[in-house]
Image 1 (cartoon, rainbow over the protein chains, first blue to last red):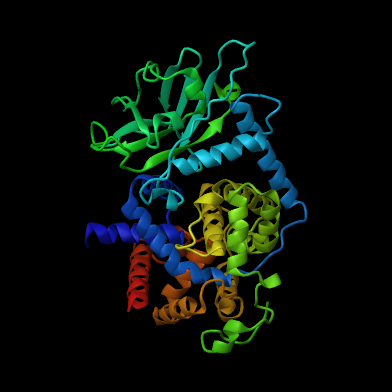
Image 2 (image 1 turned 135 degrees about the vertical axis):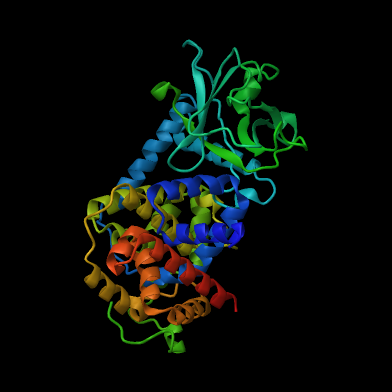
Amino acid sequence: MTDRDDLDMLAAEYVLGTLDAEERTRVAQRRQDDATLNDLIEAWEARLAPLGDEIQEVAPGPDLLKRIEQRIDDLEAERAAAAGSDEHVPPRDNVYQLQRRLRFWQWGTCLATAAALVLAVLLLAPLQTQQPPKPFVAVFQQNDQQPAFMVSVELPSRDLHVQAVAAEPLPDKSYQMWIKEDSLGPKPRSVGVLNDDLSLAANALSEYSPELLKRATFGISVEPPGGSPTGQPTGPAIHGYLYPATRNL
Amino acid sequence: MHHASDPASDPAAGTSTGPDAMPGAITREQLEELLQGVADQDRQAFARLYEATAAKLYGAVLRILKHEQRTDDVVQEVYVTIWQKAEQYDALKASPITWMVTIARNRAIDELRRRPTARHEPADILDQTASDTPSARERLEGEEDAQRLYACLEELEGRRQDMVRLAYLEGWSRADLAERFEQPVNTVKTWLHRALKQLKGCLAS
């Protein structure tokens, strides 16, 4: 049996659902960075999809939609809070911006796949001038369960702090952080290659103005050792959601 | 949902509007439009998408978790995910309902693996699973794809067919299957791999 066969069976069992919790988590994480595995998973999803036709419909309780909508409202309010609490900006505008900014980050074929290419977004919101500087925080999420990185930026000092949460150093790979903002041109610009301990120099953003940082989006991608050979993200990247700075930091 | 016809042998069933057809008969194109609306943060589109698909997704999750409250929780998170990720939907890769069912199944199985439910009742479930085969299919995918898959499943040895179905529809793990089929887990893994390879080969032929 070749490695490719093994990988295909891993993908097949992941889709079939027979793996245990630990294996499922590993596969779900690995597919973010492993396009081959991700493709194999999607191929199995397509093969087995007609089995879903056997699922009998069961109407949920009448309140479930309301619960879901409430949950979405709460999440959006959290994101809006993370993006700063300008009362004149309804939460949805921020989320909408976030979505639009995510689109910017599509390159190659990646974002087409739900999981494969993802890029983190850090939306820096207007500072509340009357308050002491607060960090703005983004969670770079590897899958739906676990944050991979948390990134915070203090304004106006522009001090950057990258903290690995679930992300681990990858053998023969480097993580690289990127910034993108309209005034920097259409392409992402490298902020720096993360150190072996997955940290990044605090002054890595010092060349950018706070105003620019507020508008910029950020991403972390997986690259060959030492960083992207092309100056542009080449590997799968990690996706982030806004996170209220007031809550967990 | 009791229906005697076997879609695999009755091509006309593919276009029937009988009890097995999607309620409201929403088309793939309509679902794609709704998903596009959701990607643009349109709450009305989201509510319509929910109305059109919730019973299917709820059915998928409930069948795996067999517990209403946990199903409510999982389905809630599934729709939040759909709201957040609608823009990543790729029509070239899957139909909207398949994309959504995939999210729902993944969440349900993750939840089941984290907190397994009480032992299944193997005999009942197997009966139900087996008898559902021809009747409850709703042809969400192309009828041709479904017929091919079912023809290929038919070629599998009986127990292996059951394993594939129990795993996909009921969320059974290797260990669950090992117990039900009174085989060591490694044997079950081998059987599953053979079944899956055979299916893949058959579908590719």
